[in-house]
Image (cartoon, rainbow, N blue to C red):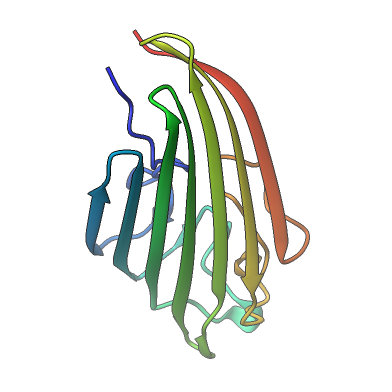
Length: 176
C-alpha cells in the first residue's frame, strides 16, 4: 500500500481547538499527481462566533474586561511532494493564515506563516522511518494574548515565548 502523505501536521478535531457555540468551516482544495511529483493548493475559512476560549487563550477575556464576539480565519496553503524512489519521498507545505479577531475594544489582525517538511523512507509496506520539521512565524496584532506568540498545535510542548517556533520530530511509523 502506497502512502500519500501531504499531512505534515495533524488536523485538529472540532472541540480541541475552539471552545464556542456555533462554528462554520468551508474550504476548497486541488491536488495533482505526476509520476514522481505532486502539487496541491488549498483555501479554507473558519468563522467562530461567541468564542469562550481556544488552545491559545485560557479564557475569552482581553485586557480591561473586553471579550471576543467573533474570530475569522483564512488559510492559504501550497504543498508539494517528490518521490525519489517509490519508497522514499520528500514533502513540503507552506500555509499562510490571516485572522480577523473582533473584540469589544477593537479589531485585531494577526497573521501566521507556517512551513513544514517531511522526509519518509518506507522499509516495508507497513513500516517507515521519517523526519519532520515545522517552523512558524507570527506577525502579531498586539492582542495582549497568546495569539501574539507562535504555537505549533499538537506538536510542541506549549506556546513559544516569542513570534517564532520550530519543532522537529524523528520517528518510526508502523501501520496495523
